[in-house]
Amino acid sequence: MIRVLLADDQALVRAGFRALLDAQADIEVVGEAGDGEEAVRLARRERPDVVLMDIRMPVLDGLAAARQIIGDARLAETKIIILTTFELDEYVFEALRGGASGFLVKDTEPAELVRGVREVASGDALLSPGVTRRLISEFAAKAKKPRSAVELSSLTDREREVMALAAEGLSNEEIAARLVVSPATAKTHVSRAMIKLHARDRAQLVVIAYETGLVKPGWLD
Image (cartoon, rainbow, N blue to C red; front, side, top):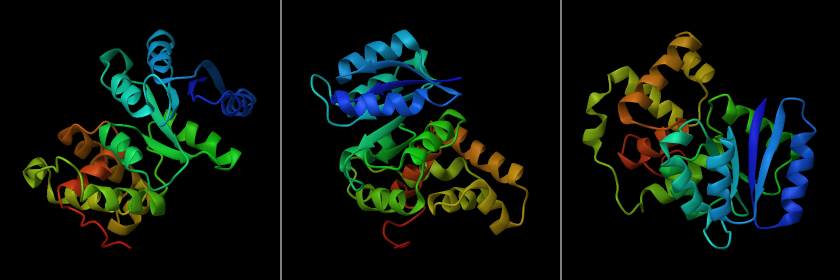
């Protein structure tokens, strides 16, 4: 059972998401928060697998709340999906940079929301290749503290290659096909790169690829 916490200041939005998710046999909504402070408190109490976190909330905004949850060692297994009204949002980029596993726009199709929750709960990052590439490439170049390319020195040439392909938006299966290796091998290279770079998940790995210059912002457009 995938345990989900909803954090949004609009009661109607929370009610809609709860009805949709609770109708799934493998998903259970374990709590609702109307502000970021309550979201952090409930996350620490309920230890959900996934938090659906709105960016703009009172008391404590979603970005600050996400930072607290991601920074809590007790919640290392809790994944965060950012909910946003705007696809190209600097706050969403900062959340991805800080360790959020992906984002969804609020008017996303119900099936996409359910799929996203399942993907993130299974350990994948929720990366819509086109939108995420544009989002990260737009804001990575303007990041307040860009990363040094020296960080990549611990990676093998193949791990760098795989990381660049992940930043291009390719899945493990697509990376495997491009490099003519097995999907398991591609997954292993991605996992090793994440471990070496201390990336919480694939989304953070993509951000690092842009910020270190491994992938140049805008070149994929």
